[in-house]
Image 1 (cartoon, rainbow, N blue to C red):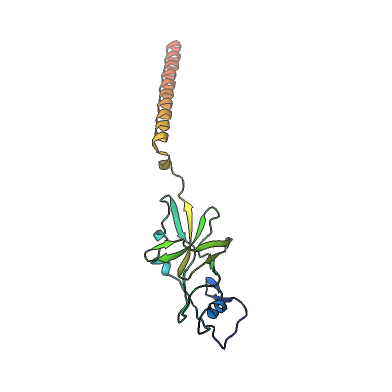
Image 2 (cartoon, helix red, strand yellow):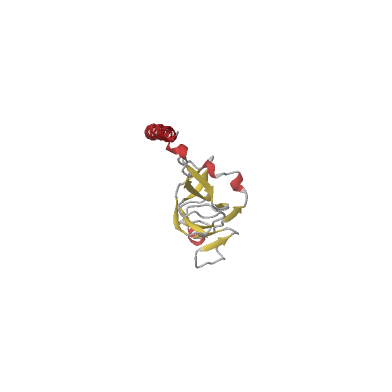
Length: 192
């Protein structure tokens, strides 16, 4: 909390076990008549079991993985909650990072995860920094492609190609067996 009797000279950083938040609480307090502001920053260790990454609307051919704990940030007992600067959240990855995956900073909107007002600032295999222009419930979701299976090849054009290959292979095998039979017949006929 920042008030008339509390003076800070830098961006406030709050930490939890797997995440941290940088917020300009001084600027927010200056924009309030009371010249005060309070922030609540919470981390929910098992919330991803309820607010699953499946609630993130992406193309059906992607696998979605929750890469962080779910966190929330609010400004309780603060009249004007307009942010003066974007808030930065640093999420420590709670699962193995796939460099081929795509990370999204998401926030909860009634019944789904959305990307609204948040973007990835930086990332590495251990953590990701998200910048957001509002406070809400946040998480980090990674999208990866489905593994490639033979069944994925069975589109209409690929099915025609596979059928053509099958016909040529079948004709080739039948022809080869016919020639092998002829060779065996000739070999048996001339040795008897």
